[in-house]
Image 1 (cartoon, helix red, strand yellow):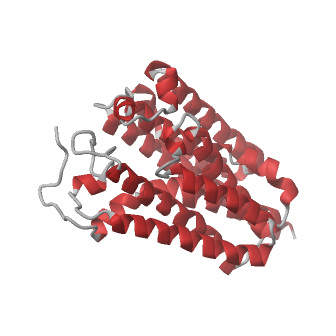
Image 2 (image 1 turned 90 degrees about the vertical axis):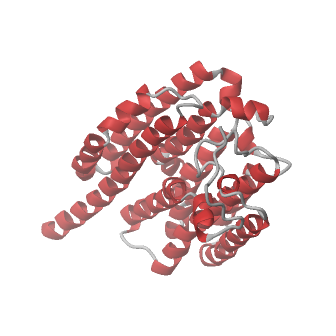
Length: 322
């Protein structure tokens, strides 16, 4: 069945643009990890520089928007996205809206990438070379993740690279930029494990649902190598590890925030159960990814809220103690 809009736009309008950058994915895989790095910094030093923090939050957002735009562009011109193999508007906005000239998507993607680089230069000038090392690695992953000739998102390492880069390196880069404490990077990476896992989970979920489509497109993702059944078991195992790591992180480092996390877990109980229950197939992609998105949203935001709540309560108790 062909999935196309009844009223084609023919060009990249604001609606098509928003569909391409996928704000929900940007929130979970770019803004949230950066904000977590800010929270780590506040816990360490008690304050942050506002302008620098603003740029540090914007850089991963711009980079992630760039990746999403370039990924959609190259999937479109490469014939990987067609009206016959997309199941939702957001999966292939250029195809769904029957855009005739996709080149603006390339230009916008490069513009976002350039903006991220320019803001990165400011950060390096302010903070020294340490963030630059992480930034260069992140830029290389961005370029190769959705590239035309080399695309790591189409390889078995895509889940690991995306999770480590967005969920781990972003909080680490933000933290060392704000505190200068490069020696804390191993600890920050461990504490960022929940963010790494949620990013990897989304990619694994999509790749498992898209196995038939990826096979036709010549992609060799992780589920293609291990099979659907093992991929589903792996996704469930990652979900369990993710939930355990969240609770342990809050209990060990942000104990005053445990009630907030408990509330988030309670709110997400139905979507969490659905995540384990739904089959990860092409025909069932919408329910499967929808359940994961709902669970990830509530629990990830709950993780950040509980961390922030701990800092507030700790600050109040410290003031009372004085």
